[in-house]
Length: 152
Ligand SMILES: Cc1cc2nc3c(=O)[nH]c(=O)nc-3n(C[C@H](O)[C@H](O)[C@H](O)COP(=O)(O)O)c2cc1C
Image (cartoon, rainbow, N blue to C red; front, side):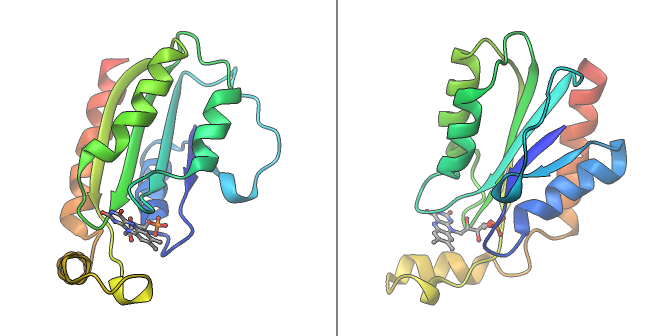
């Protein structure tokens, strides 16, 4: 099962959909969800875009409420820079709730810096992010997911 938040350009949703297509995971868009019972699922993924240095606060609030003791989990994100360190805070929270972290994945997701900042560095990062997630990112995501599935 995958919970994701992807409101800007649906970049993170592309990764979530890939997991769903390959393994038939149930996809839950947390910006628009009802109550979900996670008891029947042995692997739960949490994905989000990065917005001002953080994954969605909604995702954190959802995780806070969940009973995740001994559940296999993983975290994925898309961001302008495409770095995994943005996932660390959520991984830490999941571990503190007794979940078993199976991995963390990140790739670039396109954004247009001029929509929210005049900062030149953001503008440069924004240019580099165009076209992502691309086929290579999707291939890396698939490999990441295959390895997790093999390990459980
Ligand atoms: C308001 C806003 C803030 C952002 N802040 C960051 C940031 O701090 N670091 C970064 O690398 N990318 C940042 N980005 C780029 C997004 O992380 C990137 O476009 C991501 O793929 C969006 O995911 P989504 O389309 O699934 O919502 C930001 C984008 C927006 C719209």
